[in-house]
Image (tube, rainbow, N blue to C red):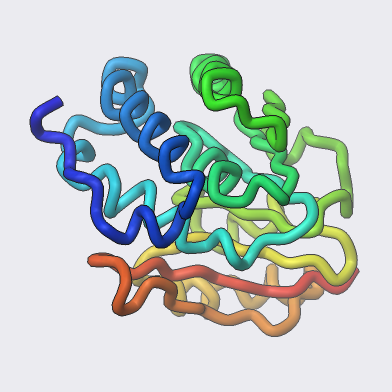
Length: 208
């Protein structure tokens, strides 16, 4: 555990009085994440910066009910649920071992705003049910939109955490953007001046 990144000062800014929960989750992920196949062995020295804060910076963009597609280790879903106790989250993940981890963490952290659902995104069966749908590091935008957009209510939002090629992914997904009636599709850069590594988010409104 000695190679785990020290908590950056920005953590308190992002989590406020929920920072102890964020620390508990980060400690658990650091202790068990590699062994349980949730994170790679090279992630510990950048766990806070690359994963926890990278996810948490998107918290102000959320409202109402949120679905996180492919929650995996809980990034971004569990981190966002810690940061936003006023928002209801459904974490959607198909793999049993990841589902077990998510349920354990929900219980351990006492998160009463989280539902964990074992399913593939296309199997959820809740069309237009959520105010916001999010995902992080799941797939290219043109593949991700058919999985996420149908779950968003008319007038709701997509908040998709992406990498440096986010703008190119938008260009490559024009067919899907038109098909799913997305408007105001743009890349927003979050965390400049606060985080060592910024977060890029593709945002869009779904017009059903």
